[in-house]
Length: 184
Length: 410
Image (cartoon, rainbow over all chains, first blue to last red; front, side, top):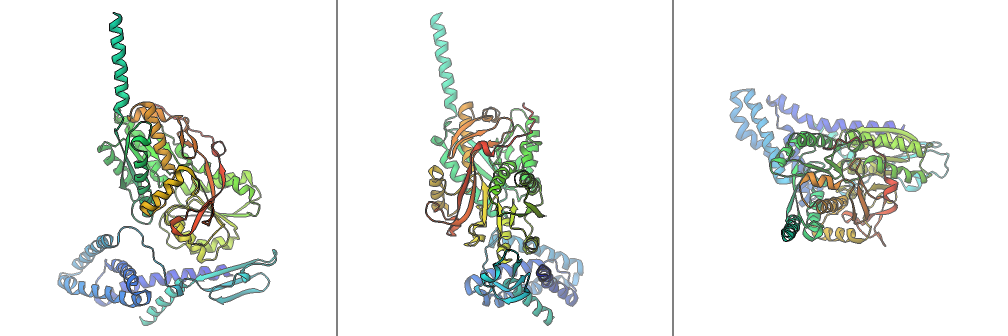
C-alpha cells in the first residue's frame, strides 16, 4: 500500500512539474498567438537566476525575485524584438524565438559554465514532509516530518516494517504548482 | 684488420648508446577523449587534473625511459560519434597515444576505429590506452592488439565483490540497478553469474536498467527497490547516475547496503555527505588509505587542486608506459605495444602485469567501505569528513579472471 501511495505521489509531482512547464507555453500561445520556441530557455534562465539570487539573498526572497527578473527579460524581448516581427506573420515569430533559444543556451553556458551546479534547499525543506509507516500488524499510519528511528526498527524479525519518507522539496514543489493551477 | 673491427664495434656501441639516449627528454604526446561538460563533466574534469598532476610526477626522472609525458584533452560529450571525430583530430595532430575511459560504449567504438586505422596506415600506428571502461568484451570477444586496459574489468571486480558478499551472511535479497548500455548490462550479467556460483541462496529480487546520464529523479526506482524488500543493491552506476541515486535513496529512506564501483568518483561523496556510514561499499583498483607513495600523492594533489586523486590506475599507466619505452628504447607505438605485452613493473601497490593474452592489467583490488575519517583511515573525501576504508584486499591472482581473447597480432 505504501508503495502505491509513494509511487502515486511521485507520478503526481512529476505531472505537476510538467504542468508548470507547459502552462506558460499554452498561455502565450492562446493569448498572444505566438508559438514560443524559447519558452524552455526562459524556464532554464529562471532556474539559473534563482540559483544566483538565492546565493546572495537567500532562498525565500529568490523565490519571488527570480520570476520577476526573468519576467522582465521576457517583457523586454517582447517589446524590442517580438513586436517588430509581428507584422511579418507566424513564421517570423517562430524563427526569432527559435534563434533566441540558441542565444540563451550559449549565454547560460558562458555565465554559469557547462557543469551541473550544486544547490542545497533551505533547512526547512531538507527533511521529509511526512513519513508513511507500514507495520504488518498495526497497519499503515502517517506521521508529519521524519519518523523517529525506533519506530522504523522492527523489534521482532517476523514483523515487516517499512518507513517511506516523502521529501519536503517535492511536496513544496507540488504546492507551488497547485497554487499556479488554481490561479490560472 | 683487427683495428677496423674494433673501430666498427666501438662505433656501433656508440650508435646504440646514442639511440638509447635519443628518447631521453623526448616528449610523448597523449590525448584523452572524455566528457568534460554536462552531468558527467565533474568526473572528467577531476580526472583531467589527475592526469596533469601524474604526468608531471612521472616525467623525466619519474620514468626509466626519461621521457616527458604531455596529456591534452578533448570533450566528447560522452558520444561515440564525437569521440571518433576527436580521434581523427588527434591523429592529425600527430598524437600516437589515445586515452579514454568513461563510457564502455565509447571505448568499443574507439577500439574498432583504432584497429582499422592501424591496419590501413602502417607507420602511423596509434595505441589505445583504456583507463576505466570496464566492459569485459573489450578484452574478450572484441579484444584488439592495440587496446590496453588499466582498470580492472567487470568480471574481475565482480569476482572480488561476490567473494566479499559470500562472507556477509545477512545479505539475502539483492537488487541490481544499472545504466542501460554495455557496462550496465555486463554488471548485471556478471553479478547474477558470480552470485549464483558463490551464494546460490541469495535471491535476485529485481533488476532495472535506466538511460545513461538522463535520469534526474531516482525516486521511482527507490520505491521499487524498497517494495521488492531488497537488503542490498548492486550498481555499476557512476557520476551523476550514482550521486542522484544515492541522494534519492537517502530521501526515500532506503536503509540497505549499496555495493558500487565508483563511490569515490567526483560528486558522489558530496551527495552522500555524512550519511550511509558502513552501508556503502566500493570495489576498485585503489583505496584512499593505502599508505606509501600514493597516499603522499593524494595529499599533495588535494592541497594543490582541492580535488581528490581517486583514479589511481592512472599511475599504473605511466609506470607501464615508462617501463615499456625503456624496454623498447623507443617511443614508437609499434615497439612500445610489443614491449608492453607481458610487461611486469613495480607500481605503487606492488607488481602489476600487462597480461599478454588479452592486454588486461593484472593488479590488486580493494574492497572499501564508506565510514568516518579517523585513525589510520584519515583521508577525508571531498571534505565530507568521511572516507573509504579498506576492508579487504585481493591480490592479483585472486582477482584475475580467464579470457577468451583470440588476438590478431600484426
